[in-house]
Image (cartoon, rainbow, N blue to C red; front, side, top):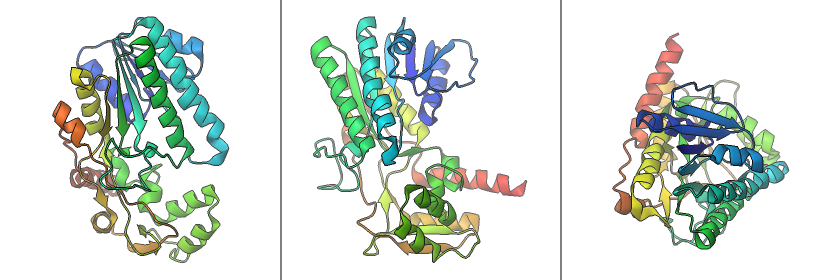
Length: 326
């Protein structure tokens, strides 16, 4: 029996489907029900920090994919972050030790480094760990809980520091949690209003004439943003390789796309599909600019991402055209 936490999420739901396709019995554990009724699947609905729910979820489990987490960058959500990501991981590890699970694969994040303020590029697993966000701090504390369980109880763990991940069809969805404000001007304005960044909102509004537009984000010196965007299917491939490769036990690896996405090249591709104009905005601060190396994971497992950004865009274009024909 496999346990997948975050089983209703973007990566978790796809991993559940992949495990079921392999003929495995799978239990999901999430705060919200998945609605899945496939043979071989069961689920526990609850909070990760609920010790009783964690114990029910872990019963009869041999291997765990702990993907679930609470994600927020709002100061008001810090208590929720620590409850779900730190206390939740502690409760799950304790339950896993009692059940004597064979494998525990933990989804961490590139925000443990931090990615946006790297000391060198590309960021590899030896980069100093200096999370700048509360979310990144909670993921680093989760890593330490898992490592401690490896030392103290012999838990066979693998830690995977996830790249930013999306489904391809989200790239051109203005309502997408990530790509909406990343690539579309008006959703970006609404996001920054929610963050209370009044100076940034005022700057963005200067470029808003009330019609849909794309936004090319650059930093205060005019350097376009650059980051990794990984397809959820490649993340599932990587998770299964981590499970199937004994050499990953006890290791920590970056998992994500091989090449970063340069916004200066990406925005014209997206604008050509939507027909929307591009508004170029120089935002305060150093901006987003990083490259993370997945070389160690590729060497150990043979991982080769099958969905580079250009291929994701092709699928996003098909979804956009189908939606706008109807």
